[in-house]
Image (cartoon, rainbow, N blue to C red; front, side):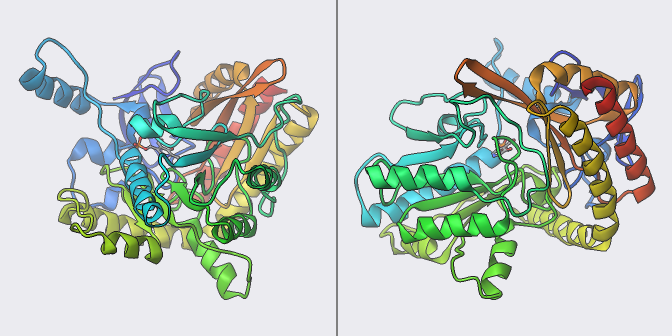
Length: 430
Ligand SMILES: Cc1ncc(COP(=O)(O)O)c(C=O)c1O
């Protein structure tokens, strides 16, 4: 199995045990493994390989995957070809279809106009490619997309630094408000947001700020989809951000609403099965039921074995997250503080943010390979995503380092791995 997120360095991985990848250069602690791969040991049997080394889609390539691709291609396109398969992207498309069904009851102007955040990623299928702006906007004929810039492209890129649990979605809100005033944003347009973005300028809004944004959209008949493909299933300490929104509503917040749809994927099965789900609110579901043709139904999505794996992961992750939340919080907060010191020494260059389970370090892309190499030397691995932001003089190339330690390891080993990460970051970034 190869780790190929970092195009320059391919790592061959022979297995995974206790949160560590086994590689020819020694064990590597998977600092990004939380909610994705650490709990597979207790899943119903899937086969030895899958039990030790399953990870979600893109970054991993295994012998079994390659073997399957060539076996299937041999029966279909024997001269070569390629096999693509996706899961989160498909559910995002299903959610868009559901909203479109509702939209058409009220407004049959076509096509829908989609609003997305600059730097977001929503998948790699035909439509999702148009909505993903991580590597700049990709135009797809017939799909209308408006990109919202939360950093000001007229000023130098300034990475965020500091705790952001209650950060207001100020710039996002101001952009939408201005667009509504000028008539650019119209009723029944569709706004697509990640609940807790893995990419993009702002990592996390407070649930209240997100809820208020959704409330404002509801009041103005703007349809909303939360993409929780990467963030959901406990990646940030909750199954879904909708839980936080519902709690705030139950506590009496009047100006908070749920989205029209939310989409979950990777964390549903801890990365083991390519299962995804589009969840739509009751008024959207009712519009689907009102269609004269049969309501939506898929024949091979949530199969019985998939449901069992998903249920098993759901209960196990819920327990893990609850059981050591306080202890994990302290350990993560300590690393966050120390990375904050590094960021304050490099104002304008390094940013650091956190959620209850994850720290995101925002660094110049040019420094990412050095940091990654130092991590490998120090026995660590993590996921690093890259995003390009336009600025007045060209583009800011940023790398986002995602630290989400496994939930089911002893806190001592997590503490040590985080301390080693902070040291690697100091070595290469200060
Ligand atoms: C936020 C987000 N949305 C959608 C997707 C697409 O998921 P998939 O690759 O399973 O189709 C991803 C995948 O990384 C993602 O991170």
